[in-house]
Structures are given as structure tokens and as C-alpha cells.
Length: 180
Image (tube, rainbow, N blue to C red; front, side, top):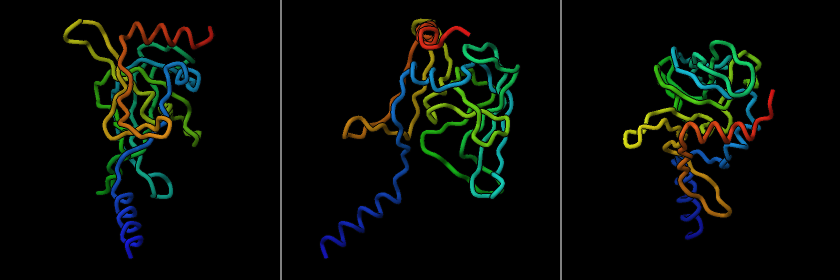
């Protein structure tokens, strides 16, 4: 009976868990896995169901200011799982859709659906928000998000992401990306 109670508790706990588990990727690993690395601003966003009506996606049109890897068009459309459509909401812990006006440095690859959209490499890890540090005045990038956990060896801990100055990030990307 005691085993049944423990099993039931574990089952209920796992049903209510709302974290996303990620394998941490370095800037170099993100750079290698990405076909495109762009800096840009979110200009438009919408949501819709997939063809089988089983998953909601949020699409964000990003105006590309510059490309650090790959040849990007003036705009790219980013597809992220989750969002609200038709009175339903699907949320994936750790995934944070871009906000209109948001500046970001994005590590991208084409969607598996071959639909012309791009997806963020490493789920949320390849989505670095660009902001001005109020204390130093330097431009910083950060991919830290709430609701994600990382597996480190045999332990699980909160995923805190990376925060770097934009110039540090660019230097690491330049080292990791062969000249095109």
C-alpha cells in the first residue's frame, strides 16, 4: 500500500510539473548548429493551429538589421511552439515569444516543415534579448528565461542562461563561424 501511495504521488507530481528540460549549449555550439545568426527587431506577430489542430504556434516577423551567419532576407519569420488561438492556450515552459519592438540576436535554423519559417536553435537558448545595461551603458545580450531547467551531470537545476556584452558575443561568434 505504501508503494502504491508513493507511486501515485510521483505520478501526480510529474503530471503537474511545468518545466522544460534543456541540455545547455555554449555560444560556440549554438553558432555551429545555426544556419543563420541574425540581429533584428520583432515587427509583427500572430498565432495559428498546425494542420492537424494539435499544436498552436506563434509566428514573429523579424526585420533583420544584420546577419552574422548565413544570408538572411530583409525579414525572417520565426516559428515558436505555444500561444493562444481559437480560445485555447498552449504554453511551453521556458519558451517566450518575442514581443513587438523587441531587439534580439537569434541563432536560427529552417523549420522541419520546410514552410519558409525559421526556428530558434536549442529551444529558447538561441534567443538572446538585446538591451542597454543601465549601470555600464553597454549593450548586453541575455537568453535567460523562467520555467526551464538544465540537466548537469546527475542533477537538475534552474536554467539561468547566459548574459554577455554584445561585443563579447560577436567575438565568440566570429571565432566559431568559419568565414563565408
